[in-house]
Structure formats: structure tokens, C-alpha cells
Amino acid sequence: MGFNCGIVGLPNVGKSTLFNALLSTQAAEAANYPFCTIEPNVGRVSVPDIRITTLAGIASSAQIIPTQLEFVDIAGLVRGASKGEGLGNQFLAHIREVDAIIYMLRCFEDDDITHVEGRIDPLADAEIIETELVLADLESLEKRLPALQKKSRGDKDAAAQAEVMEKVLNIVSEGRPARMFSPAGDDEAKILRSLQLLTAKPVFYVCNVEEASASTGNRFSAKVIETVKAPVVIISARIESEVAQLSTDAEKAEFLEALGLKETGLARLIRVGFSLLDLITFFTVGPKEARAWTLPRGKLAPQAAGVIHTDFEKGFIRAETIAYADYVACKGEQGAKEAGKLRLEGKDYVVQDGDVLHFRFNV
Image (cartoon, rainbow, N blue to C red; front, top):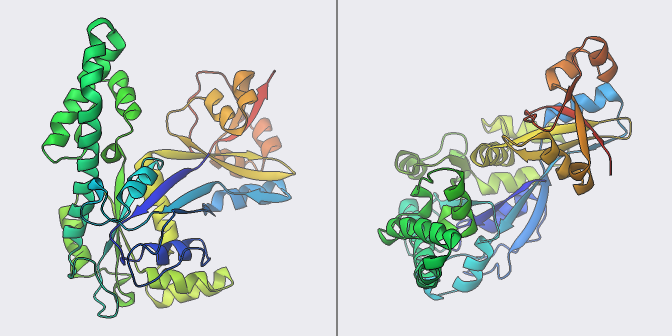
């Protein structure tokens, strides 16, 4: 189980260039005209995590399988997308499928690359994106609410749904995103998720700057950081594209160091994405493979087992659990057993980031 992020933005902000770089491929055409990305390009990349390499080394695992992160490069949005302008309907449908949204903003000047609005103003671009998504949610709520209100007269579940929908509609009607709604408990949070609203999804921003500003940012990205109430990642898509073409990790590290960068943009995107979605990683380790798995924070051991296979969750008995630090300090499973660091956890155990797990189940 991983997670996916939709990369959205106005045309010609660097979405496809970044997508190509992240996937080390030229699968998405990057061209200097709007709508060069007609269908959403989807690609998976391995999530870098030094812990899995360490675990594999201790266990002499024959194979290392990192967890995966999915990026979706979505066609460029334009003003009026909520009314079908440009590729509006396709654009909005594709966004509904992702877990989180990356607002990619153009923070560089280049006379050779046209801007669809005729100016460089990342905050105005962000406002266009947000406005179009809010308008799409407003239309959706206004269409669905009357029927639900009618149904709610004799249906408690429908009444609860209508109440949440009314609260969210009040927020969206003011031009604010649905994520500004604070659910009163798990039931309202569940109803909010069921509405599948575009602006209820978590958001972070990517400021695409010129190469010289990759390590420090520039005046455009500074304005974004000062203004938005969400995480911001500064990236030069061109640099990421150059890094992707290098063949070894050593070459990549040397190239990044020369530019004053400690890590790739991909690494920063993953870290922010994991934090935004509140995800953790657990591991399964053995002689055949060391494998990383992704799980939302706060989930129980049976749910972690279900990430591997639904049968594991159905027949869950218990989880043999070793904390990552204990596994490393004790030099593996046997050492952890001898030191009393291997625990048998039941159905109520909340899985922790870095846990090394072995599930016992019966189907």
C-alpha cells in the first residue's frame, strides 16, 4: 500500500518535466503549449528509505522491495475549468481519484516559455486552481443536497449526511475549500470523506524555480511560503531532470552537492507527502526479501496484515513485533528474541513506524 499524489497546475509550469524526472523517463511529453498532457500519466517510484537496506543487510535478504509512491501528472488547468473550459471535466475527474494534491506553481521567468495568463504570479495561479476546485465542489453539493434533505425526513443516516453537507456547503459558498471544515468526531469525518470533494483533499505546494535558486528559493517562492497555509517544497524541475539522467547514486550526490543540495526533490516530496497524509512504514524481513509497506498512522496490527494480503487480516492471530532500533541493535530476529525484544502483539496493537513484523494467521 502506497499513496498517490496528483500534480496539478496551470499549463507550462513544469508538471510534465518534473513527472519525467521523478520517474527517470520521458513518458510524459513536455511541450511548450497548453494541454500537451491529454490523459493523466501515472507512474510509481520507489520510496527511498535507508532502513530497509540496513535490515536486508542484517538478514542477508536476497531481494529488497521498497514501498511505492504514485504520481499522477494531470492535464493543465485553466480559468473556467469548473465550467468545462479547456480539459476541465477530464481534469476534475482525474483529481477525484488521488489521495493528495500537489499545487505546482511557476516561480521562474523565461521568455521562451509562455504563461497561459501572460504573467508570472504564483499566488494568482494558486488562486485560480483553488477557485476552480471550490466552484466544482459547490456545484456538486448544490446538486446533491436537495435530494438528500428530502430523504433525511425518515432516515437518520441521510439526516446526518445532510447536516454535514449543509455545513460544508456554507464554507464552500464563501469561496473556501472544504478542508476548512472541522468534523465533530469520526462519524462526520467519515461522511466528509464519502462526499469525495476535491477541496477536502490535503494539499501541498511545489514551487518550480530556476536552477540558480534551487537551494535557496527566490522572490516568487518566498511570497508563496509567506502566504499559503500548507507545506511548500522548492524544486527546480530542470535540475531534477538532469539528476535523473545520471547513472549512479555517487554521481547524483556529487551533482547535488555542487548545487548546494543535500537531496533530490523526489526525497523532499516523499517526506512532505508522508507527513501530510500521516503515513508510516513497517517492514517484513527474511532471507528471501526485505520489504517495506505503507500504512496510515494509528492503524492496528490486523489492518497492517491486510495490507499484505486480505487473508492475513481475516485470519489474524498475532504479530511478532520488533522495533527497528532493537532489530538493528540485536543484529537480527534471533538476537532480538534472546534479548527479550521480540513481542507478541494482538488485535489491539497500534503499529509503529519502523516496526519489523511477522504475522501469525489462520485461514
